[in-house]
Image (tube, rainbow over all chains, first blue to last red; front, side, top):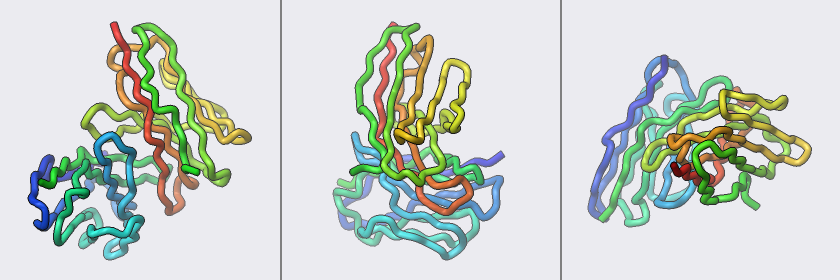
Length: 111
Length: 112
């Protein structure tokens, strides 16, 4: 069966510091992968999606970037965090039926 | 206009009650429809896909009305454990590359 991992689970970072969040998927090959952010009391915002190694599409221009160095690895990064980057970051993969499955998420607080 | 709109609630119902959530979507070309459940401070989890003919999974029944671009979720015999936020989700045909659109969610609290 497929599983999706994210780490770290929680993170507190100062404004201006860099960020690296990692997501890995097991039990499937060449999945479509997605990064979402959910701010407190808000809906899910799609940030990036990827259909394969090195292929990244950005939905919202901002100070975040994503990379996919391996088939089942998806990384979200920032060079300098802003206060507005605080939120719950979720990685997801999509199966052939279009159903998306989420990882446990990373709760980021920028101070 | 938002892609997916839901009544945010909150819905507060007693155990054993029947509760219904509604959702509308704006893109008539949408082909896939889902309900997700999200517990407080947790990731969303797939509750059920919604098929054109409607489908049922235990106490949960989902309906799709393509003509009205409307999706519903009915929960019968509510349990305390049903308390969560329910997200309506719409997207392209399953195997098509494309994004899913998530509603902001409807909050449900079931009280004893």
